[in-house]
Amino acid sequence: MTTLATPFSAQVNLIQPIIDGLAHGAAYGLLGLGLVLIYKSNRIFNFAQGEFAGVGALMTYMIYTGYSFLPKLPFGLAAVAGLLAGILTALATERAVIRPLFHRPRVVLVVGTVGVTLLLIGVEGLVFPRGGALPTVDAVVGLDTPYLTKIDGVPLLYQNLLTLAVLAILAVGAFLFFRHTNTGTAILAVSQDSTAARVVGISIERISMITWGIAGLLGGIAGIILAVPPAGTVLPGAFTGTILTVAFSAAVLGGMTSLPGAFAGGLLMGLIEAFANADYSFIPGLSSLPSAQSEVAVAVVLLLVLLARPQGLLGREV
Amino acid sequence: MSLLEIENLRAGYGTMPVLQGISFSVEAGETTVMFGLNGAGKSTTVNAIAGLVESWSGEIRFDGQRIDRRPMTDVVRSGIALCPEGRRVFPGLSVRTNLELGAWTRRSVTKEQMDLVMSYFPRLEERADQLAGTMSGGEQQMLAIGRAMMSKPRLLLIDEASLGLSPALTQIVFKVISQINADGTTVIIVEQNVGVLPYADQAIVMEKGTITFDGRGKELAATGDLRELYLG
Ligand SMILES: Nc1ncnc2c1ncn2[C@@H]1O[C@H](COP(=O)(O)OP(=O)(O)OP(=O)(O)O)[C@@H](O)[C@H]1O
Ligand SMILES: [Mg+2]
Image 1 (cartoon, chains in turn orange, red):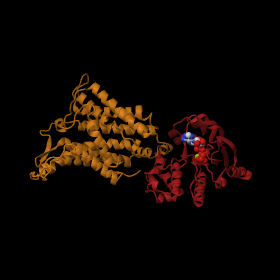
Image 2 (cartoon, each protein chain N blue to C red):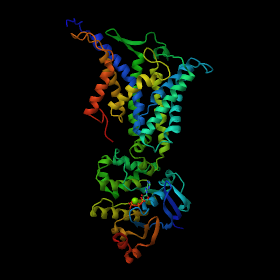
Image 3 (cartoon, rainbow over the protein chains, first blue to last red):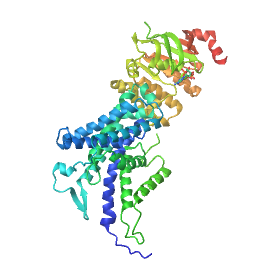
Image 4 (cartoon, helix red, strand yellow):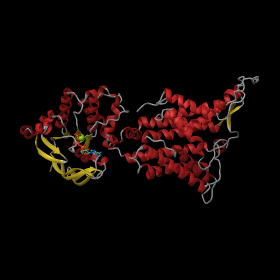
């Protein structure tokens, strides 16, 4: 074996993967937050979280472009409609599927959310079979370039910065919500002992509704921010197919009950993926790695973390 | 009019009846103790009063108002608090947060009531920032009673106050309960420990979903029925 190594380049081998990784990771974290919220309160994996994002993105797109009989409105209003669609979809899921099955084994509820996911993907396909994409933030605001600056030639996109900022704000906001508000504390109380919560007079129906409403809002925000080029699209099932599974891993990695954990787990997943996909031809003999390496790397890291720290990186066993 | 009136109450689980149409009343300011063997229906009775278990038929009146078939939130707000069997504190929340949640339906009274509860159980004040799940069984029992008191109830229902407590701690808990009663809260205690009898104004004995004794605590102590019930 006499493969010649190419010289190490900070731009290709370091900066590009870091920026790609953080950008993708923010997307995972954003969906991961909603997953953690529902897990904290209902102790289930909500498979429909990706499609709450999908519905939010689709509604925003259809109103922004004036699709079919819908009015064509400015992006801000279209986004509000998208967020409302996300919230209403989540509330409907809670009312129609979660509440009637509330006292069943958790696995039944999980399967229920899988059913909702398939239904939503199907309905999205009926309403809007074509693909589309939402505008990036620089286009909405009317900036000249899509990037703030270039680091060693790698552009730092406004859209990615926005995603990171929104993720950070939501993670901190959700953390404060659970720490310092009555409703947030009540959600934790219901999740720890729903009988005890009823005993102190908390209406667990109302709390469940609020929780799902927030998860729908988080989904809608994720959808609107992530359904933009180059990576994101408005396509039925796109979020479930591309982001949701990794977002699950991110949430698990972060401890499943920790909101900052979902944030950190998301970024970590993105970085692992990006570095696994990076070019390592500067190392002699490593000119070509198989292309599925990022999935393998993500899975291996996830399993290693779980074996070493079953409660996740930031999780507590409660 | 009695503070609590129960008339012909039937309740159960699924299709299995437990309470076979029981009737009794509780006077304001008194302490009522419910005795009975395992499975007699004591927990079902207090849970039905609190609204945790749905009543099938009959009436429960509190201060003259029907409270059966009302959501539990309304029952708590009307002035009834339950300290449930098995304590059921929120394990992952601090002692202070547990207490604050006890005042969920009356958020305005938190501060003054918190001081009162802490004075009943000074141990809770020392441990205010500890996670409830890491407290000892006895401390959790104090917390469960304290949490119930946070809603400033007129009627306090305590299901098995002494379960798993040392004799010394049991006596302390009984003393605090009698202090709570002296401070104006009507109390119903479900109890297997005969040591509670001196505190009982009224005593009720249940057997298989019916009431077999309902009278003054002193009378029950005199008849020796309790020895017979528990020792066979
Ligand atoms: N959630 C439930 N589902 C089905 N049956 C129940 C349930 N809770 C209680 N039971 C049954 O109802 C009957 C009365 O139970 P209950 O808990 O009221 O008795 P108890 O007098 O409190 O007994 P213990 O002294 O053991 O606490 C028992 O036969 C019990 O098995
Ligand atoms: Mg019982």
